[in-house]
Each structure stands twice: as structure tokens, then as C-alpha cells.
Image 1 (cartoon, chains in turn brown, yellow):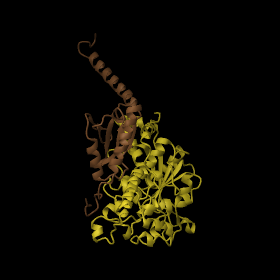
Image 2 (cartoon, rainbow over the protein chains, first blue to last red):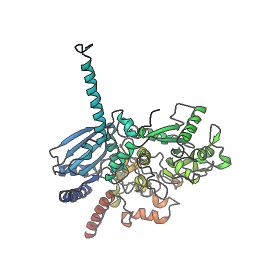
Image 3 (cartoon, rainbow over the protein chains, first blue to last red):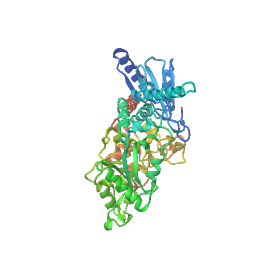
Image 4 (cartoon, rainbow over the protein chains, first blue to last red):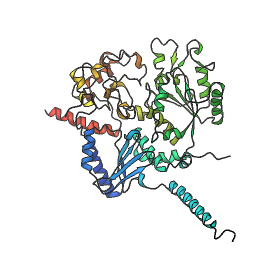
Length: 144
Length: 359
């Protein structure tokens, strides 16, 4: 395989995909045995386009996929190997701003944060209160 | 009077969830090569922090550094950094001018005594009493000293502020120096580059806000997270270098095939910066990817290193032949590994070397 004239493509598979795959396998074995979670950051690794494609192909896609809209778009999916998740964040213009492989039951990004839940409880209570106020102001009860 | 809010509360009011903080922290952790497990703690730290007061001073500079940092602004992830700081004074960006502008600086200093961060771009001239650059009739030297007196930390943004940069280039007519040659009693973080990568600036500020301390620095006071690896170590053209395949000119067959640019003057082997991984213009490209060697702009005195198009082994008078020789011979002589990714890469290089030996 050769590089494109402007050098945009790396010359070949570098072996990085296999190295990452070995690490995933070791971490997954740990997780299965002890429940120890792990995160492997891919963003700063010099993965070539071919490396990335090879990694994607080997890990495959599993049963779960999700899209998160928080400060831009993120995609989360479980690979064909249960407990191995791919988390990919997109930045401006749809470029990948960071991505990682998480070995866990469910990535933290998908969980509701307790602070958000508290804020949501307040908002929902206000909504209920408004609804009650509205009900209390109906013509039937007015002046009773 | 309303109690000052945390960033989490401020953003919550605008419908930004803690997931956004987590996402931003994951992004920063990746950029700064922090252990991924630190991302949740960083998210918690950012959400609980108050907005950081920042006073930005511009001295002998071209405003390219400000251009660079404002280019990191987007309606998505990176813009969160601009919610974490309160930019109380910045010549170019603030609406106020004249006395009102200087009052804004003085008020921020008084209101946040001991807590504000001073960001400086540009070098400071010392020759002839510093008369070569003044603002509102005050020399850069005096304004720097006065403003830094009660600062928490100082961030020198760009090679001019960090090392004197182009104003300091031979023959240095104004006696320009970098900030850390003047400010000795405060922590100084150098974020060099001409200009610096926006994420290196915003990431360092976010780290300071989230953890309340400065990130780990190298011997030139640069955050190791962004300046820990050489351009060469992380360059996608490195495999060509290993195989001895070089472009001999900018229009030869090697250049067209994307070979290593070492022989046409690339300073990647002795330049520490994150261009090869973070890239520029929203991750589009970086100089080597566009077919031009690295100029070494994040290193001291890069302007005076013997020519941008001369190979390292024949230039770099201040570098010493040992380093130039090591660069010429290649990775077999070793350029220390630092990060996890590097381990993968080096394992591969060893594997390839072993295969070569077997042949």
C-alpha cells in the first residue's frame, strides 16, 4: 500500500491495531475475573486510517448503540464483545474530537449524573406545581 | 446580592448537563495524556469551580496567539473553556478602551487579589529602560511587574512570551526577553509555539481551574502533556524515516510519495510540541502533512538555528552534534518513550528491527 501524493494517508498498517486489541483482551479478562474497569484512550495514538478500520472490523458491533447530545454529538456502542464499549465524541464540523474504548458494564457517559437528577427533580416539581395552580384556577373552583 | 455560582450551576441554567463536563474532561484527559480514570474527577472539579479571573497582557507580539486561541471556539465541545474563565482584560477583545480598559484591569486585580491568572503574549523589551513598547504610557516591564504582583500564576502564551521569540531574534534590537526572565516569584507556565496550538492553551487553563494547580512541566516550563513528545516521535511519516526513505527536494519523487522531510530541513526530531497528534485548523492537518518540514517554532531561538531548509545534521549551531547525530542515525539510538501510545509504537519498531536482523 502506498501513500497518497500529499501524504495524507499513512503508508500502511503499523501494527497498532493488533497492539490495542491485545490490550483490550487483557483488560477484558481482568474485568471478567474481578470487575476491574478500564479505559483505553485512542485519541493520541498515531493510528492510521487503515489501523482504525482494522480495529473497528475486529471488534465489530454488538447489541447496543446510543447517541448522546451534550456539547456536541457523541456515539456510544457496545462491540461484539460484551463489556467492551466504544465511545466517540465529535467536535466542530463532525470531526472526531476524542475516542476511547471502555471496558465496563456501561460507560459513565450514559449514566444520569446525580446533580442532573437533582436539578431535574426540581424542574419536574415546579412543573407539577404549575399544573396544580392551573387546575386550582379553573372556572369551576373560581370564587368557591 | 446573589451568591457566586459554580460553573456547574451557571451552565445548568443554560441546559448544559454534567455529561457535557464529562465529555469535555474526557477530551482534555485525552489531549493531556492524563490517566483516563481522572476524567470524572476533572469533570467534578470543573463543575464545582468558580469562574477563573484572567488578565491577558499583550506586549511585543503580532496577535497571532489571540487569533489561535479564538479559533478554538466553536458552538460545541471546545467552547466550554470560555465558560470556565472570566476574561477581565484583553486589549484586542475587550470593548472598553483607554482609561476604562486600564480600570478594568485594576478592578480585576483588586477583586481577585492572589487568585487571578495573568496570560501574557509577546516579549518584553529591556533595552534603554524598556521604552520600545509601552501601553497607556506605561512600559511593558512595569505593567508586567505590577500586574503579576498579586497573581496566582502566569501563563506565557507563544514563543515570544515564553522565550523572547522573533523580537529576540538576532540582533535583538530592543533587548527582548521572555516573561520568566523577569517574573521569578510566581509559577510560570510556558505554552510556546508560533502560534501555540489552541488546545494547549485552553487545556492548561482548564487543568488549572479543575485541579487548582499547574500541570506537570518540563525543564523549559512547558506542560509535559503537550510538549512531552517530539514532533518526530508522533509523526505519521516516521515509518519512512525508519526505512531511510527521504524527500531530497520539494518537487522530487520522494516528496510526491510523502517520504520523510528530514533532508529538506524538518526540525521535528528536536521540536517538542503536539502538532502531529492534535493538528491544526480543527484537526485538518499540520505542516508536515501539508508537505513542509517542521520549523521548530516551539523551541527557544528557533529563528536563529541556521536555516529552515537545512538538515538538522548541518544546522542547529546551538544544538550540539550529539543530538543532531542521534537524529540522523535514527530511532535505534533511542528517543525516550513516555506515553502508552509510544510503548505500542516502540514495540512495533523493535519488532520490525528484529525482523530486519533476521533477514
